Image (cartoon, rainbow, N blue to C red; front, side, top):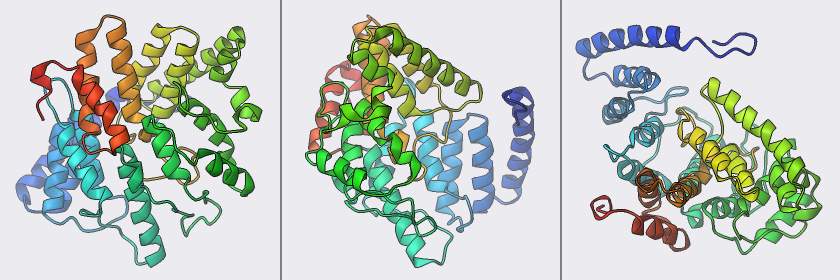
Length: 364
């Protein structure tokens, strides 16, 4: 654990995990049919960044009917590890995407430890929204999600998360003005003050901007808004702080996909392709806990992983534009796999990505 702003000692952390892995192996040798043993061993392997092996252990825990318990999300962790395991040499996203699609459709469900009917219903609705948005299917995001029973103040306007899911994937919602108007009319938690700033960045690249965006103080102070207004010195000053924050977060193996996207599009508005690629590369190095788990109703984007497909597509396009065609293929392939079951208006991006791949990488 880090002390006084210093990152954890990763060498000690890894040695402890390796010791835990030895214990986990002995546990599995003694009880190969015990779901809990597979689950706990999977968590250790995930910490050791052995993501493919961890995904297999979580799958085994599910197959052996892991009982509901606090924090036990075997299916979610399996998908998380498949995302991390995907590489040029190992194509893991099709399996992850199929699981996401089944979750979004309600064909699979993660066991949840609660007897509260209202809580269970909200978690199920929120989970399906997250999985549908991540896999490029905003049409399956519920129009109304509401506030979780344990935090009635953390509500959101009707249509909000569906509109954000569309924007995150690069599509313009028809009802964006109406949704933003409802946002202003409701007394929402403080994090929603960031909503205009989030939406302004998601509208980058020619998407429709909501009425009133230029009047929002938070948006006007952003690096992207300053760059678009021609205030390049101020924009660069804001970007230096954001770059520093993203780099510092990386020391703690943390960070935000959505923050990386905001930094990248701001650099591009200043004509700085190298800065944009650096921000996207830091996103690519993010550790687990950033793709699948949950929906935070008090956060304007719902879940910052919703913008992942768009981040991959931007990363691929910039790599290709700077002559790194071979490096771009991994990200184009990931876009094609992630959005293979997407809504029609999102699937066109997957088709465009697939068209950039060599023949041997286009096979399903």
